[in-house]
Amino acid sequence: MAVLEGKLTVQNQKFAIVISRFNSLVTTQLLEGARDGLLRHGAKEQDITVVWVPGAAEIPQVAKKLAEGGKYKAVITLGAVIRGATPHFDQVVATVTRGVADVAMSSGVPVIFGVLTTDNLEQALERAGSKGGNKGWDAALAAIEMANLWDQLK
Ligand code: INI
Image (cartoon, rainbow, N blue to C red):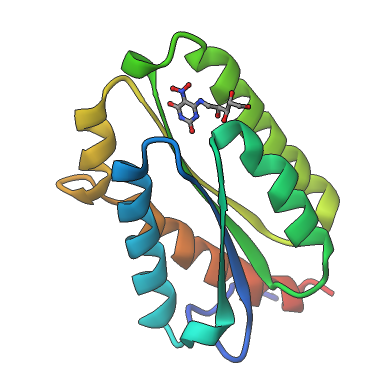
């Protein structure tokens, strides 16, 4: 029986993080979690490229460019779409979720969804380093695991 799974160790692999400025109170905390997750599993500072975009709706296009560029083993997307502050919440959520899924399917590189979609700021902060953990950290570990799994699927 062959069982394949990705290790949680970074070995000379490069990662890109696409992160939105909108709700930066939350997204900067997601970035801290992701950076910490990568560094504590063996990444070096120079292995991590952070790309800022205006809002979550811009994440897929930039993730696509990074994923198709051939330089990164995985792309991590980080953002926060908060219903309370967003009249067009549903459109922004649909754009970013469908967009990131499309890039993941078409680019040939693992693309990890680390975008929070919550009803209010409190829920978002809970998932960005307080009682709900840190989705940035979770996304970083998923990126490492997928990057290492990827090489075994060839
Ligand atoms: N972008 C977000 O990342 N989160 C939000 O909650 C949000 N709100 O509230 O609207 C948001 N809007 C901006 C959007 O992502 C685009 O940047 C903008 O529409 C320009 O394309």
